[in-house]
Amino acid sequence: MIMKMIGKDLKIKHTTTYSTFSVLPMNRAIDSKHVQKMIASLRLQDCLRAVICCKTNIIEGETRTYIIDGQHIATALEREGQPIPYIEIEIKSEEDLITKMAYLNNSSKSWDMMNFINAWKMIRPDYMKLFKWKNMYDIEVSMLAAIGINSAAMRYTTSTIKTGNFQITNPKAEEMCKAFNDIFLKIGMSDRFVKFQFLAAFLQAYGTYNHTKVMSNIEKHMKTVKLLTDGDSTGAYIRTKIFNLPK
View 1 (cartoon, one colour):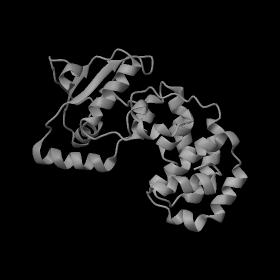
View 2 (tube, helix red, strand yellow; view 1 turned 135 degrees about the vertical axis):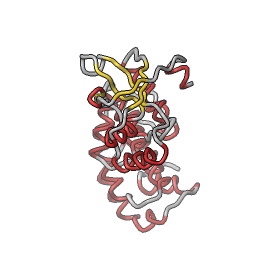
View 3 (cartoon, one colour; view 1 turned 120 degrees about the vertical axis):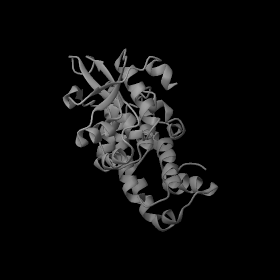
View 4 (cartoon, one colour; view 1 turned 30 degrees about the horizontal axis):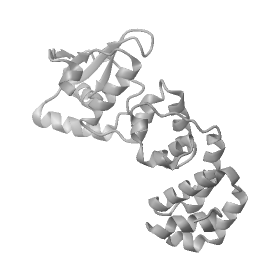
C-alpha cells in the first residue's frame, strides 16, 4: 500500500539545508522526548529511513516543501548536523494530503483520535467545532461526536471521524454539550462503560429533558452511581432513576 502511495521510483534526495522544510499545520506536534530517542538511535546505527515530503501550494498559497512523515527523525538529524534523506511524493488535494499523512504516520506510531481531528479541522469546519468542544469540556471525544450527531452509535463508528466524513447534524449540539458536561463533572470518577450509559440515556431523554431534575437525581442517587459497573442492570438503573425513562 505504501509503495502504491508514494510510487515505485523512489528517488531519495539529501540535504543539510534544513530550512527546506516547512511545518505542516495539520500534523501532530513534535515530541522532544521522541526526538531524543531518535538521536540515540542515530548515534547507534545511523539513519535507516527517509523522510517523506510533498511540495505543494495548497496549504499557504505558495509552493513549499512539507514533511508528511518523519518529522521527528528530521528534527533529530538537524540537531545532529546530519543530512536529511527525503522522498517527495505527489499531493493532489487537501483531502489527499491528510489521507496520506494519516496512513503514513499510522504505519509507524499510530494516531489517536485527536490527531485525526487536528488534521481534518484545517479543511472541515465541523472538525473545528469538535476540536473546540474538546478544549472546552474534558469529555471523551467520541462522546462529544455522539452528541454532535445525537446518536450513541458514534461510540462504535469512530472510523467516520478518521476518514474526514464526520458531520455535525444535531442543531442542539452546543447546548447539549454544556448540559452533559455538568453531568460528566458529577460522574467523572465512574467507569467508562457507566459514562456511556449516562450518555445514551441523556441522548434518549433530551426531547423532554429537565436538567435541574436530572442533576438532582444524580445527587440523590450518588452513592449508588459511584458503585455502578459494567453490567446489564446499569443502563436500566440510569434510565429509570436518573432520567425518569422507561426500562
